[in-house]
Image (tube, rainbow, N blue to C red; front, side, top):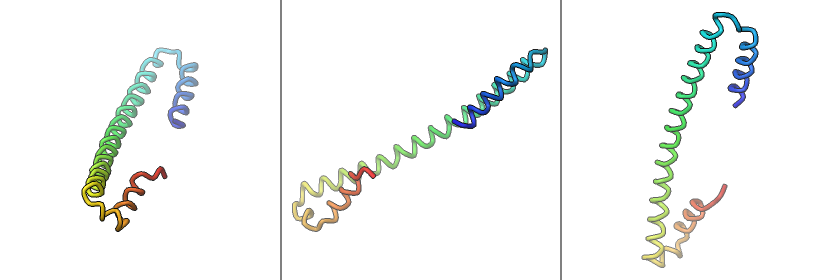
Length: 93
């Protein structure tokens, strides 16, 4: 992550010049800020994973319905729409 590497560089540069009594407080505040940012990123990732799983479940349900219909009704294969939907579901792009 570009912003994280920039912060890490700033922290390293800051550490060499902050060897006095206030250095520990500055380091602690930087650490707290980064921990907060990390927690926000984790929350975002969890929400995105939940959304991904939700839509994957929907697609899986559609896939099963199509397969059941094709297995139960061979004439459905002739219309082509179910095969087209299947092709969309199975496409890699």
